[in-house]
Image 1 (cartoon, rainbow over the protein chains, first blue to last red):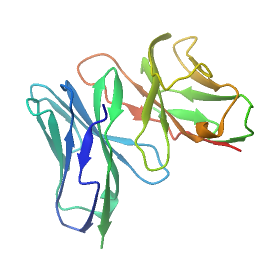
Image 2 (image 1 turned 90 degrees about the vertical axis):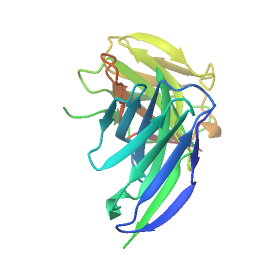
Image 3 (image 1 turned 30 degrees about the vertical axis):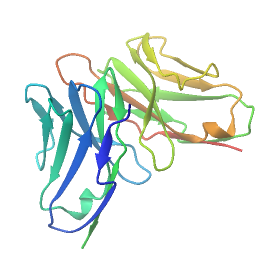
Length: 107
Length: 115
C-alpha cells in the first residue's frame, strides 16, 4: 500500500515554514524523503531509521514516529529553491513512494 | 563520481516496437533499481538488482518487460511489443547495501512516448 501524504499541495511565501506528513498502513523500518522538481529526477533529502538515526540535508529536519507509522518533514524559513513535489518513501529493499505533496514558494 | 546516467533521454516509438534503455549506476553502488513514473504520480517500483542478481520484480512488470544487469555494473530494461500505456518516464537509481542507510540516487530518466 502506498503511503499517504498530507497536504496534497501547499503555497507559501518565502520565509514561511511548512510541515509535510507521511502516513503508512504498514510497519516502517525506515522513511526516505525526496524532492522532485518539474521535469527532473527525484533528489534524496533525508533518511530516518528506527531508533532515531537520521542522515540528510542540513537545513531540513524530519521526525519518525515508529509506533504511529508516521513521519513529518519540516521546512523552515522556506526559500524559492524549496519549490517542488516532495515524496516520502518506505523501504524494504525497494522504495514505495507516497502520494506526494506539491510545494510552491512565492516571493 | 559522475552520478547515475541513463540513455537515451527521450524515445519515441510506434506501438508494437521493442525498446531498450540503459542505466549506468554510480560506480561503487551494488544495488540498481528501475522505477516508472507517469505524470502527477510518484515513481512506481519495477525491479531491482544487487550486483548481477535480480532480487525483486513488481507485478507491474509484465512478461513484455525484462531487465538485466549482466556484469553487476550497467543495466538494461527492455520493453517488447510496446503499448500506449507504456508511455512514461523510466527512472533508474542506485545505492549501496552496506551499513544501515540505503539512500538512492536517481538518474535523469528516459522519457518514452508510444504513438
